[in-house]
Image (cartoon, rainbow, N blue to C red; front, side, top):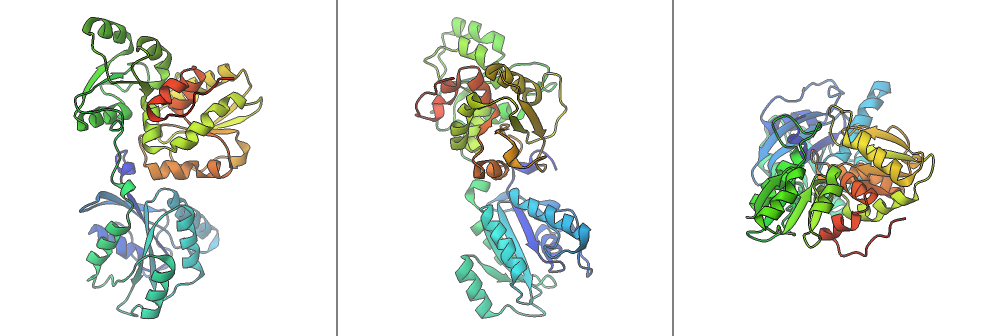
Length: 407
């Protein structure tokens, strides 16, 4: 899946085998994306397809294997189906023959566990129509909508699209501004961008591009400099930016260069506030000071990439935390949205990257096991700022909380 697609709203299609999930996704997309067969269990790995829905924009549909799959292979398919819960913003539960029993109720329990709104489609209504009593019972108890559908003659497709638009959370397709709460019309924002071994050839990294676009969308002025040009620029121009944003790995140099009366933060901290679990990051980051010998830290990367010899997540942050604490700490890394290598309780802390490649929903669900287990969580930029002693300044633009005393 491309990088851009992961940031679109995700719609998951669930239900038992042979209920017509694949037929529904093919009709919604207008293409034969998923294999349709009379043989139960045809769908194996989740199938993804992007469609355009007026009012929502591009939406990723995810077709899943049947919740009632059988055998060892079926068990693995079901595990992958349940894993989809962590990445979707809305679910469609497909039923047939007025069958609403344990399988369906279990799926709804999982939707609720991950705070996923859902609608229900009663398929194959040409064979058996939805009973009025079942419709009233489901819609009353679960506060959702159930729609009659027939894949052979899909006359209710617009009703399903309307329900998708109604139940899709606005947060899935309407993003708040990265800097909108920090700047006003005509303000100057200074961006400090290092060009080092990790910088992609000939272009900026995604968080920098997103920030520049957001600055322009807020009718402000973006000035982009390398770190060694900051002192000269401020001295020669006499310009006082409303806000300075730096790459987190050069926080110390930026802190020394940017006058204290100019707010300073990092791109990763900006993303933490924009789409991460910021309040839990604020509470968890200072727990770095309480780490002990033998503690394990789980580093969550939201994308896969070539690891350089000076990788920020795999090399620099572990080195900085180890030096700051003086403790013998173990680090484990998970890329993309892969399953965790160990039980979450084995970790003393979890540190999530900025998450520029994925949705807020995916980040929140990624962190959920740790938060439920009361394990401290942090973000790359906030952890870097903390161990460099400039945490208070880095988070100050977003919070009025008391200053953190470093141990």
